[in-house]
Length: 419
Image (tube, rainbow, N blue to C red; front, side, top):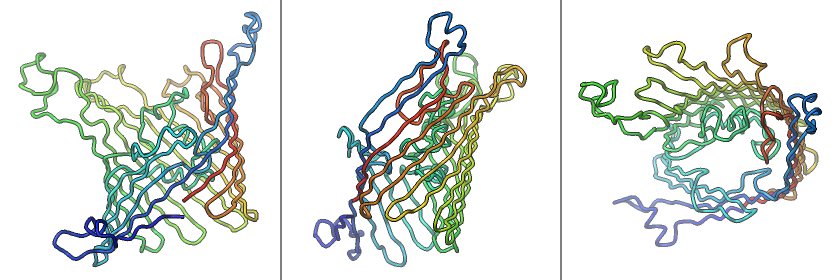
């Protein structure tokens, strides 16, 4: 149940009142999700050379596993506050503050509003939203994944974009802002365009600029620049993106593109960007709802003309697709998904090993005890090839000179309560 406070109390009325004008009606809603799950994971690695492993008296396979009580297996645990104020003339102001909650150990709550922190102005023109919010490409991942990018069932499209090919955290191409972006301004189309919806998003890098510029550090040339005498990153953090979709009846389809500057070496003459493109669709037939998505992310390093060709880095790319479905059965919902990704690490043709790739299958069931409370179960398995190291969740693979990642399995059994 959402708790709503009307601004009839004097102190709330004061906060809601515009300067020099009459009181406007406003409301504040407290909402949240508490999701607890018992999860288990196991990751298996195979010997890179079974024959040599036998000679060295090493096992052909090794593994690592873990069982834990965690949160957010079905929906992300959170607590939030949102409100609107009717400004008259069709205008409304709003805010949204949403904090992540680790209800399994109680160590994270309203310490930061890292999930979302925005203020907005909306009307017949649409909505302008300012602050920290979801990225446009993540909206497609979430909308067209039957598991909603939560728990072990999450598609590999999302997993591959938040991890490096080696399985290390940090985001593909060092893009740590794939899911959310701060310091952003978003414009949303109005919901009166016959099913057409869209969003444009820009985030500021908020870094210092120096004037005059110049191309050599002070001390190395008499150019009179005021730039620091060290490598500087003056554009890293800037982000621009857009999303356009159409939803009518059972059909929903959308495409999104984004570019995020992950590094900018001023004196070296290089700029690193991660460019994301994804498109998805869903169609609800009634007995079953189908989902599909295609995604491509490219890590690009742009070089100034003076950079030698031999010193230039090739682009790195990950492509993926996913197929899924949901099927309601009485008070329950069956969920299933298949996803696959492949990497292009930018090595020369004919000289490189086969490129890393992985595929995943997931199956789950949700039993709704009420509109707000549900029990759920999900199982999933990822198979890796050629050096890919993607896991369903949990511990990383044993990955060294003797063993290479192979398969990862996991399960979630949990309860979700929304309020």
